[in-house]
Length: 119
Image (tube, rainbow, N blue to C red; front, side):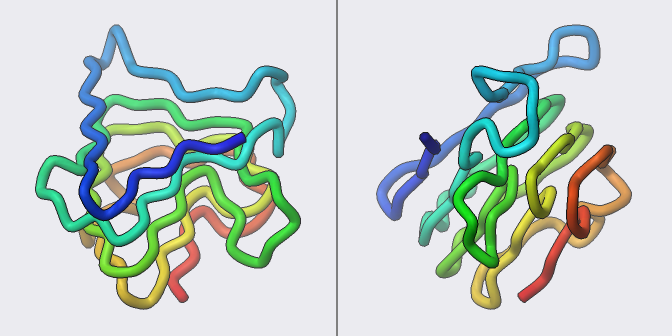
């Protein structure tokens, strides 16, 4: 299963340092679910802050990740934890955009491949 944000939609999840918003798999193992996909959504409301995304990256594709950004998707990710992916923490497609400090403004742990992969 996965969670996909499409062109006319947006996903803004803003927690706090003491009460983060958690997106996780049914089981506590890498690849328990596909993760969150932002696909061609240019909304300025695409914001993840104080969020935990974990145990995603299922699917057996080259671009599997906890967070997948495609086709001009625009997303800001800060103060979040991206953990235990079966592949990448974040996969950023060539036409997608993410904040330049994504690798330093977030914490990454135990992702099987790179924390952030830029295609």
